Image 1: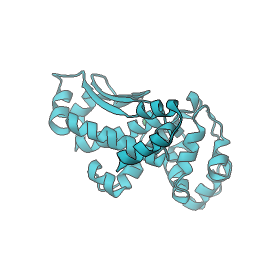
Image 2: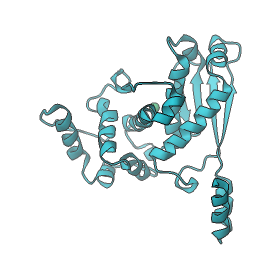
Image 3: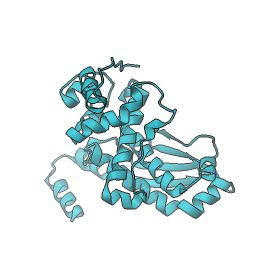
Image 4: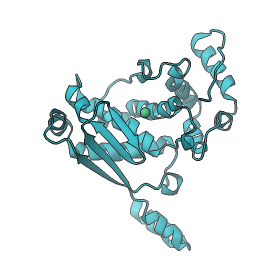
Length: 248
Ligand SMILES: [Zn+2]
């Protein structure tokens, strides 16, 4: 059925360029294990596996497009290949363009259900692959906050939950990675306004395609970030609003 609709839209188009662009927009996923022979690699193969990783990469990408309202290929980045590497390095996961690099030592040393943790991390990383980075001008916490929101929404979503194997959501912003007040609340802040308008994050992300300005919040939510922060803070704690500085 999908293919049929696709063909009709191709036939209806008079633009050759459009056809080529559409054909080139199919995304492929690949897993490359460069840590073979290590404890992390052995645990990856035993408890996660390549097939599960490929399925997760595809599902996480599709879920991200849903949150970002990027259902059509010409609405998102034109990547045709997303690679996940298992590598030997200290850390958790690093995303660069359409490459996701996952730490074998992290897999080896993780205490608990590593498949579940891996899945959540892949959702966060997939959001980084597809989100706009504001031409590297956006605050880092906002970039990670948007990726966290995608991950959290997946955890809340019934269908996605089957894949995530996770019954409850977690607040990732309690850790030391994002220590600055009020940015440590960015996930809840984004979630609060996403709850009021399911296109809020999509609008914000779209504006960040070529750069970043605090004024994007006005475009996305009709109010400046200072006002939004006041609204958020008043809603959650009823305390007097604290001044928010956004630009890095
Ligand atoms: Zn991140």
